[in-house]
Image (cartoon, rainbow, N blue to C red; front, top):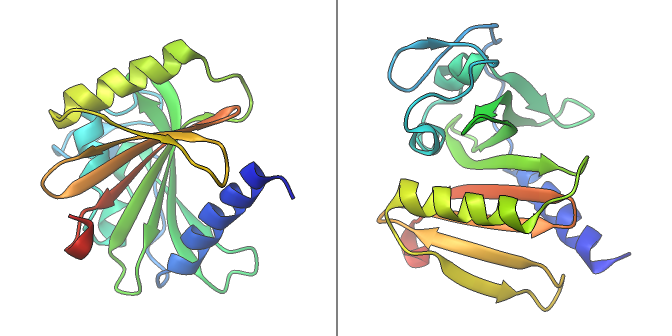
Length: 185
């Protein structure tokens, strides 16, 4: 198996193993982090990346109606609840936001799929997102370089309580957001 696919499979397995208990059903209209009603077509308003990052630590049921409403994300056999999937816009671009939950129904990680493999990821697109994350977090980007296992690049931003990691992989561009806890800080 190609090393790049091994990395994708490993990331997917990590999300699947995170699982949490079943949560409430979703609706078509959502509420942004500031209490404003919002549909998926309108996207994430205002300080969008901060709203997406604010999913961390929330109860899964409380996120169900955000960003136009999220759909439940289960393993194929419906034995493990993973989190939610939101189809919305961020910075005017269509994105898919995935959450994963712990056993206590709390969102533990967020992954924003900026490019989902259906089109090429350009250097301009990567640069735009590097700038957006730098501006939203207020911290300098750290170049993580090329991973020896997969040959992919990554860039990271660390705030007081959160890590943001931007990863391009062929036709995929994702931004992972996780809390900085314990020894990770």
